[in-house]
Every structure is written in C-alpha cells, then in structure tokens.
Image (tube, rainbow, N blue to C red; front, side):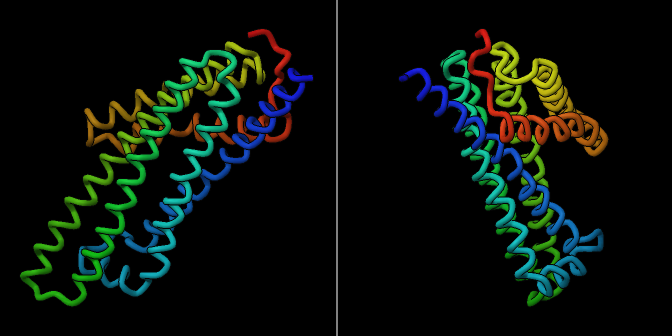
Length: 233
C-alpha cells in the first residue's frame, strides 16, 4: 500500500512537471512583446516606442518573470520524480535549474532598468540622451550575456534530468535520448556564442531549436502518461 501511494505521488509530481514545461510559453511571449515594442530603430525612436507602450512592455517583462518562476516549480517536480533513480544527480540537476532561474531573475531586473532608461530619455536633453543611450546599450548587452549564461545552466540541468529519464526508462528512451542530445547541443551552441559573439544569432538559433521541440513533447508525455514507475532503474 505504501509503495502504491509513493508511486501515485511520484506520478502526480511528474504530471505537474509536464504542465510546467508548457509555462515556457511565458518566456517566449515576453521576448516577443519586448522585441516588437523596441523594434530596430535608433535609441530615441525606441525610447518613444517604449514610452507609448509602457504598460505592454511591463507585461512582457512580467511574462518573463512568470516563466522564470515556473522553472523553479518544473525543477522541483522533476527532482521529486527522479530522486528514486539517483538522488545525488537529481539534486545536481535541481541546483543547475535553480541557478538558471536566479540568473533569469537578474535579467528581468535588468529589463526593468532598461525600461527606466528609455522612459527617462523621453524627458532628457540631447547631451543626456547620449549618456542614456550608452547606459541602455550596456545594460542590454549585460542582459544578453546573462541570458546566454542562464541557458548554459539550463542545458546542464536539463541534460542531467533527461539522463535520469533515460537510465530509468520512466519515459520512452528514444524521447529521453533526443532530449539529452538536444540539451548537450544547446549547451555547446550557447558556450560557442560567448566565444564567437559575431555568430551568436546563428549559433543560438541552431542550438536552441532541437530542445525547443523536445521539451514540449516530453512535457506532453509526462502530463498525459506520467512515468512508468515499474520500469527498471
């Protein structure tokens, strides 16, 4: 009876983790909203656009915050699900995903700082606007580097969790293998983007696509089917 209760609890956490996988849509939504408002114009054009859509810009940042917070819940769900397989590795993966969330939170703070710079630029003199432009550029570059570092932590945590899924047989091994390899590719691509920043857009685009496809599929499997706790560990 105790075993059945433990398995039921494990499956409940697995399904919860599956649901949390889909909360990454908030991250994507936030990025799209902010990108559409900022556009590709010069600093003052961007500042005017941001001021005109300040509330929507804030909503975009808050979407990113929801996505970052959901990562913590996802990591906890995966940790509880996979702890019976290897508690030490599951804890390692949890810590990497928590570090990802902390860095992501810092990036959100930098996003609000950038917003304030844009708003101040609408009431600044020409000389001050130049200084604010420099500040906005510095903050944006710092945030971009923070995102890359955050994704590297994500990749290591994701690869570790998926390795445990592969070892346990809790989900189809072909799915776990795909996710594991995609996570490793993502890590390599984002490390390379820090080494070769001029090719960052290409590298991150290629590196992020496979895991971007794998995660929703893993999430859907966990949400609908749960885990096969009778699988050999």
